[in-house]
Length: 95
Image (cartoon, rainbow, N blue to C red):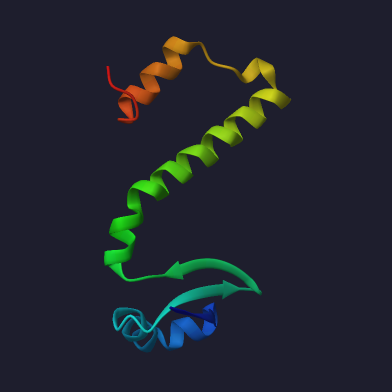
């Protein structure tokens, strides 16, 4: 699979063409803004297959950020009961 990189300005003007390339399976498309990759367009079938792994990756990233905040500001910690309630309400933990 090839990877095509497109500047965001060009992506706006050639959106339909870029979607056709992705839909045809010819290439994944990386969108850059100011020289920095900010998004990737992939076929929806690929996204659906990766969704669980992406959820895990994002949860790990949030947990690492929360832990780093806690290390820097221990007083920001929450009691387990409060944290558990949040996790249950977000569907991340069974009651």
